[in-house]
Amino acid sequence: MGVLHLVPGPARTMAAMIPPSFRGRGITSPASLVAFTGACELAGAAGLLVPRTRRLAGGCLLVFLAAVFPANAHAAAHPERFGAVAVPLGRRLAAQALLGVLTALAAFR
Image (tube, rainbow, N blue to C red; front, side):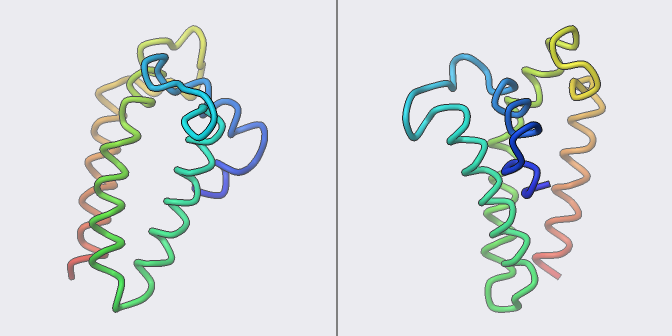
């Protein structure tokens, strides 16, 4: 998923999902935030593979999952705008929770 943050089409969709209250300019522009979150996902995934960094990476990924949830909630609130990307909030929350559990299991085993 981290790679998709760096692919132009999906990255534009993800940038549109960022709630207006989180949008800024420069380093906090939606495009910059999407690229940064993609890099965070890739770094976290790599960190899970290295025993020395596994716990830190897992903890960072858990914080990451919480940090990106507002964008998913924004998309869920606007299905007419985001179509299939706008997973209903309850299902998205369940998916985020499952990802959190799986991340914790990978990081803290």
